[in-house]
Length: 340
Image 1 (cartoon, rainbow, N blue to C red):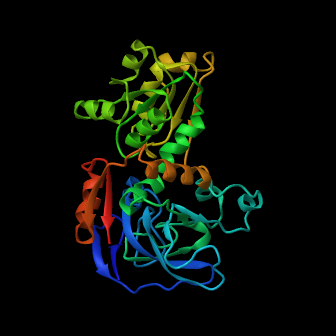
Image 2 (cartoon, rainbow, N blue to C red):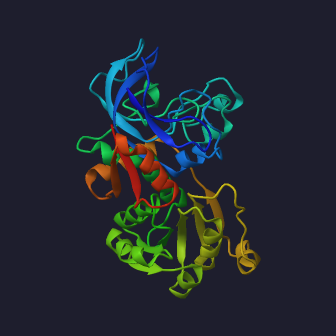
Image 3 (cartoon, rainbow, N blue to C red):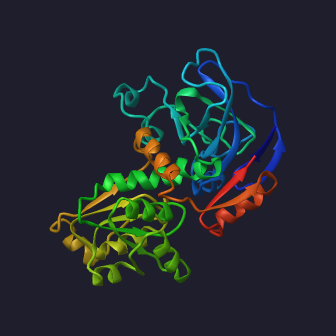
């Protein structure tokens, strides 16, 4: 089969022929039709996130396709099922974290002793075929294209979880910082849920697009947000921790900022004029990851309904190296999806 292979840390992605895997007990074989490239894939390539222990290294945690074979003991999936495979397929089932019997979420990637993480601890989806735990796959709604499903499995999932975690109340105002892979989802989720939505972006070329996505107001930073009346919720989706901290200048009393995108190498530090009032104003800083597979199902249904539209740039398998390079440079608007 053809697969995008990364030979070592900082190596370029290469399209290569490697053996097609076979499903074992509890596993399914998926014919991948579309696979998104996430910024975390770039962090793995650079070694910021631990490089995969398997060889050849096939990354990618946003694959969508069809089940073409099932392994022994699989009863919840059948040949022909349309499925996606998110970041976390499952946990070890034995460690202290697993003993707590928590929902299968991104927390497992941090706390489980041996999680099955697509493209990180087990082979990923940038390939024609992928073996995955049957229990770790998610059904795709009828009518949802593979190319729209792929980015929803990570960027859309994260954005919806961030919105849900903020728990906006009726008549509250929601602001979204950053109009990129996550942000363009978050603006649409907030607007289609009936909330007055503000976009925060320094990119002049994204202002009109933000309005088209559902933002009723676009500002450039936290000071401008404050001048416009502030927001009760800020969903920070960019990779700049400094920009997220700055946006809190526009956070209302009792407000929540949800960090859905962060730079792992940059500290998150509140500006002096914010930190002095932070506790007195009863504000909260929340972190988010993939919170609950039920929320992924919700995100997929919303996208399938047409109320939220992923914005993707499509690449062929032969263009995968260029696609990865463009994601690394921030040149893709807004998500890169490779077809196999």
